[in-house]
Image 1 (cartoon, rainbow, N blue to C red):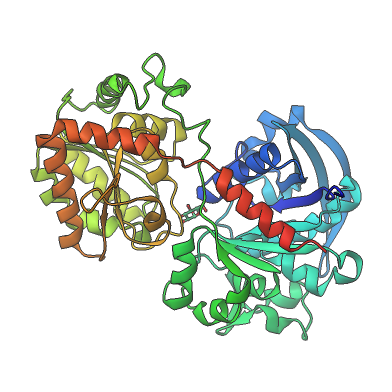
Image 2: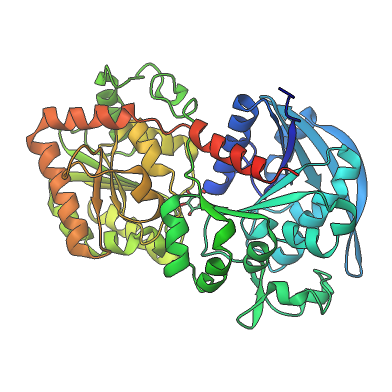
Length: 479
Ligand code: GLC
């Protein structure tokens, strides 16, 4: 049988671990690329991302400078330096432009549209330097939505054989921009503006959905929801393009998130067959957050961005009820200032029961997953969610709402062979009922709880199956 040609895949993404992750997308892009590179020898997988100040000093000494090119954005001509770094079998390319990327944060600037239009064009310009001409460019969310759009409008003549996959990590952020940007920055002609025009403004996600050859999102349930009422206004566009849409569940990096080997746990690693170490981790966590040492008090944690779609309103609304139980509560996250103030205030009011850290800190997050008993994740909508899977790995039982990827990863232990608590409707009654059930099981049925932990820890949340699904999808695009 003739051997299949190695397919070349380029992930174009605005953040990627181990270099930068401000949220789930960066983690997913890094872990997916690594898993594809490791397990699918028929693919040559590389990644291109901006070179941000946040990691420049740490990694630049290990990078190779491949060359520089010019990228034009309407009347601007911008410098793009291209660097290369091979890390654990994956080749990463970085696009350097200090004006655009030497900033404190990755996003949140008035010229974000211009910054990521520059990056999207640099993805093509870089090919002439790297000499890596992919069969498929896989792009992620609005920041790289212009890649499939530009392939149709600007680069079709040169790179007409390339195909594109666009992955939606979150429909909420669509890259909506004011109209002036269309000609003055994006350089889209009158004829092409219909591609990105939607509801009286520019909508980059809409453009990518229309232009990409395949559209994916990060769980099968979410793929259904965004066609009905979870599409933040883009439902008709998703439905029109549903023939090329699929939902592929994210995995987590099970080598990294492994309580048996995790260096964050020091000497107190543990596993499903020996969960003793988890108790020590709980004790250390209580000490870290100045909470009284209480081995049999249910320690509830929240590790989340503090934004409303994460279901934070359910928690704030019921907070005083929740804390009436004999529990401890720990929160790590940043987000809307009103939520941050709310939780800081509760930590002052209940110093023996509540501890709060307003920060994004993966190390502390790791310790919280290892030392807590329960994770609250009552999201109003959740494309996939990673925290619930990480929590399971560490024997921390998730309480989640039945939505998006939470539905696809967590089964309720009350109605069968589950490993978490799942409630259906976004209301405080159903939410609290799930919390009370967990509290009752934890407090009064220790053996059953331990079995639940062991079950959660034994589940396979690895990338292998999903990486295979992506690799099949790429093959469908083979010419
Ligand atoms: C976004 C989504 C989250 C998903 C992540 C990775 O952050 O909100 O649900 O897990 O992307 O795909």
